[in-house]
Structure formats: C-alpha cells, structure tokens
Length: 162
Image (cartoon, rainbow, N blue to C red):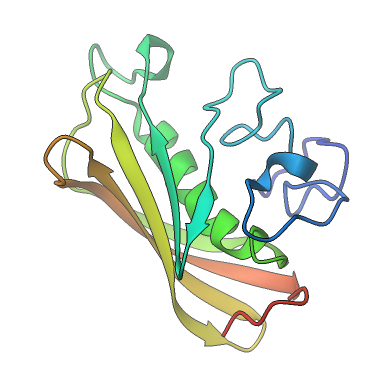
C-alpha cells in the first residue's frame, strides 16, 4: 500500500484522490489496490467493512497465492493484514500510510482455507495510529497470523479516530 505504483491518486495512501465514504467498502478510491480493489485482475478482492470499532473482511487464498506447494505465501497474509488495518482508518474517512508493520505467523494456512480478518486501534500517538490485525481460520477460529501496524495519519478526516 505504501509503494510508488500509480493507482490514480496519492501513492502513499494507496487509496486514490477521492475521499472514502465512511462505513462502506474502501474501494471507491482504490479500485486497483492489490488487497481490496475490484479492478485489479491479480488482486485479492477482499471487501472490508466496519463493525463498530472493528474492521472486518474475509479471504480464501487460491492456488495463485501459494508459497510452497499447498501453503499460502506469507506475503499474501501480510498484504491482507496490512489492508485490514489500513481500512480501519480509511473507512472512517482518514488518510494515511503504513509507517511500520510487524507480523507474527502462528500457523501455516493451506490453500483454500477461508480466513476472517479483523483490526482494531490500540493507541494513538500524535500523528500515528497503532493498529492490531488478526487473521483467523474461519472453520475453528484459530489465529493464523497477527500484526501490529504504525500508520502515519496525514489527514484525520472528519471522524474522530481516538
């Protein structure tokens, strides 16, 4: 999300020039985002939504998301976690980008295994918001991976984020 690829807007945020509609999918200004963009032919196509103080999404990795045979690549899991955290901000009308992120992989994720994604804010420090993300196996609720991301918020929007 914080690379220099042209997505039709501010590459730092990965979500284009248009302001998001709070409480709705973050794709309005990020149609080619790798994680949530519906117009990215090789993307993950994850739909994110707010549920109170939690941002949620679901994803089932396919054969194209493999690292070694039969197992989801860790970078795919990282991308999903990074975006569920970024959408926690974006769906509230804030603009920012990932400054730092740490991921802890707890278990392998076999291809074809549906996961639930969740993120929550844990702290706000000046212009930074610290978010926690988790990926759970949908079938049994076991944590597959978890993350902590520091997001540099350059436009807090109209909604209070802490």
